[in-house]
Length: 88
Image (tube, rainbow, N blue to C red; front, top):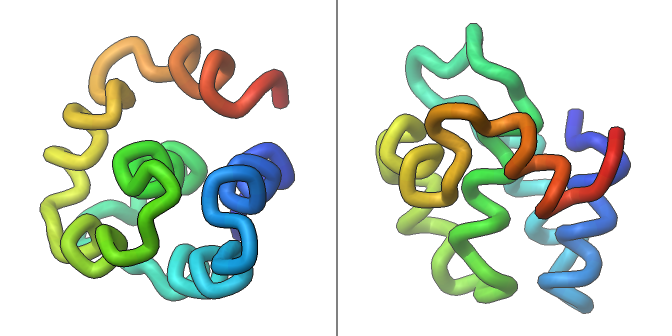
């Protein structure tokens, strides 16, 4: 389930397409990602998409590990989430 703070970010970044993005995030099941923090996985997609719905398919198809590194959520990711999404 997408956290409230990530939902706020999706609504801010994607505007009228936010519900579509939230639905896609709910359906996202990355291979071997079940032991990872769900918010972190979803946030990686949202941060890299930068409000552009057309980028979602490409990002969902990428290896989640690459997405996390490219979005700044690889190592020491807790402070990045706090900065990007606000406090929990």
